[in-house]
Picture 1 (cartoon, rainbow, N blue to C red):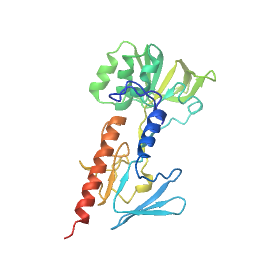
Picture 2 (cartoon, one colour):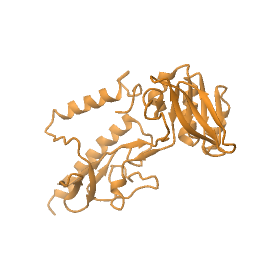
Picture 3 (cartoon, rainbow, N blue to C red):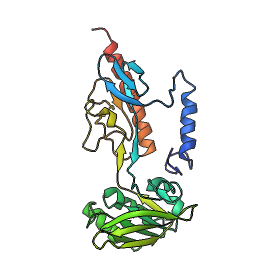
Picture 4 (cartoon, rainbow, N blue to C red):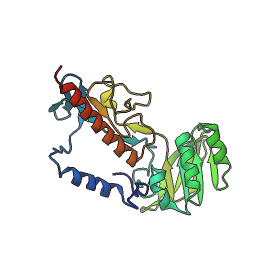
Length: 269
């Protein structure tokens, strides 16, 4: 829903997040599936029948469960970020990079995802400024070498982004503080790509299913979690490459895994 432009979904030249989601929901409605909107799961209780407790006090019980709660972008939490979200502040370079062709952009974050984003964007946009909070980049050495070889990239370390500025309609720059001197600097630009990590929506599962150190649900090749009958798919899991087409495939795999589990567990001894 947060993605402005989708141009990497094979067989569909171009679409956008809300349109794709609407199509998914319309397709699901062709089947005998109950859709419960505006409900939030708060707890999973393992058992022969797995129980899902909801925030409103209700609970659901099932022989199998597929968790696909996704992930959210870690935000900078600075003035202007929410105001200009989708108006220059972006979180997915693969999705939104083409919208900034020939323009000036910043990438916030010097880890692997930030440096990879800066390398990708450098081939599309006019100029990339990468800002890193630490005194040095944290990405793999091979990625750093590639980044520093590009002529249209500027790297600024010890930089704390303090504000995304705009004209009321769209982003026109950002402010950052040099962490050594405390001095505030401005960069004029048209886009800001925030690349400081993804947060999987799995807080409610802690202590129930095995999670990685990043909070992602650990799954096997069939999407099975550490709890029998509980499967997971998409950006909330340990599966690499957080892309729509991969999440959809993982959803299909987890569904087949759950189907296989139901066949085997309901068979007579």
